[in-house]
Length: 561
Image (tube, rainbow, N blue to C red; front, side, top):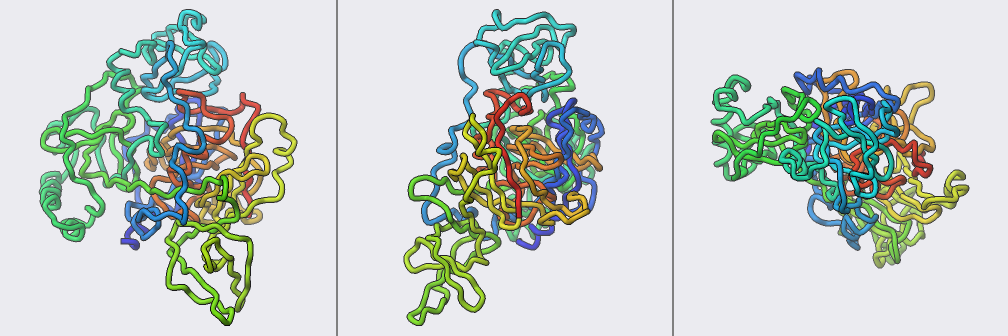
């Protein structure tokens, strides 16, 4: 299983472009992948590549694609174990992303990108809404927030929105919360209250239907379908995972359960509101919001209203790994265990170190006292567990820095928030001035540190330096800048920092603390949401994405050895 997961993990790479921001934004992710793809990953997506040409033209590096087995490799997260003391729940820190139910009139989006402009008629943008998202008009009063009439059916009326900017209603958006299309879109929109705004899976090679397909259409779109469905029926009866894989090795980790409900309402959305892909090839990823049964088969409803057969999508398990909220007695330094389970050590009567017979699970952590000892060239760290030590080489150790960056020390406003990331150490510590508030494991570029004179994208390295957060996106679909067939659907809690680099969630693996990406900083889903909600500026209520340029206070990210 582990070997298969590693092979799957090496399928995807290359510079990706975030098309979730649509025309006017190209946010690439070429630095977040693990290896070069062995085959094309998305067919028929030329239209989606028309995304954009905007002033925020970052090419962020692309995700890797570990399969479901990556989450079943004996980690503390996979097996429910955590640390000696379990951290509080996901919504305990920071305060949850603000809810959208604030009362008053709102603008509801029927498209993937409803732009929030800095001025009426401007082509620039400050943020956007996606399908089913909504933003409150200024003071919650549409009559008072109305500014002027627009110039097309797409933009009939301009309104001031909160906390800043202007948006249009028309074919692409409405003030009517009871509009049947809006009711359905709100049901399936991204959930900012969850570390997983959608459900996610890996494509085995699927067509994307625009409506529930008849059996005849399925047969024409999916060659060899009858033989495949015969295997699916056989696998459903298999008593074990091993027996299921004996039917077809592609069925590892598959979910063939029926949805036990019928199709959702079909929406007559324009091109800006419906899926433009016709096929998602094997190895690419899919974000979906619902599932239903039709014509004897179960289908998934993708985030952008496409319809794909469930029996050709392998769901990703949800990693439960999360970092450590630092408060009270929980403080730095701490040791986090990555790669594999690691032994605990104790000192003998002769003051020699020997294994205690117990281990720390991978992705668990333990607090340290700060006392160290050396024996035979190995440094040991004393833990807060009575009589127990860990070998420094076995752990990623998060330690407190003595000073914040000068730009933070000199800042008068905000929380003076900044993030310290050790690329080789595989750790992230979030600070408010000199006070650490959160610590966790990250996955940097598989190339480690940059090489002098060599572009970081060429070596899959993570850049060093001090960078502000320049863009925040609840989710963003990433398409290869060099191969539009390569897609990672709706990567969650993405924060741009420098050109093609970002911090973002990774729903496709849980090898945190290890070098996995093409240069971006991978966070676990839970950690990515926590850090996204904590960084400054916060994503305004209801917005799906934003540029931070108009906001004076921005969290700084310090990337170093």
